[in-house]
Length: 245
Image (cartoon, rainbow, N blue to C red; front, side, top):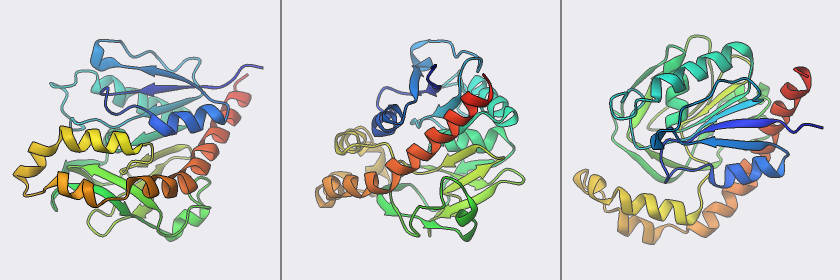
């Protein structure tokens, strides 16, 4: 039996699929990670049962800095239109929203950084991936831009007090998460070191913040909620694979 394969678009070495990739693999999904930041050309969707688009430090419309972004938006539009399961993480969620007509802009409340909570919206009770998610799950925030407007017809699934459009579904099988679920404690520490100067300009002492965060306990809590979430996404991908044989 052929295992379903997810095409993974990775925008930077520092933002890999991380634990999300491990969870999907354990759920029977093969990962084909492409790294266009190294000059690798993105393939078409033929032969893939899902599309996963990761985060990155660039903005969703920084096409000059990241010239593969138009092709990524095209893939997201194609996948959503064809019913191929999509999962966008942080920048990936912004690209998904923007590709489908949503609005992305610099966050009016400044960067949202570090451990936090989001609140599941009532409509999440009718969503296949979000239905079992608790009302206020732990997440990791790490973004400067915001999804200011969702695509027409998109379902808002989770919000935070500062930025309301934290998770959404477009169509039947495309989900965007403005937050991160894939991190490890080491990834968060590396991001903090990489962004220390930028955050200092905002008056944010990220080094002191990291010292306060209990990253090990946080990631245990993340796994409790988001590993089953990943398994449910894998189930959608397996169904897509079976339907297209």
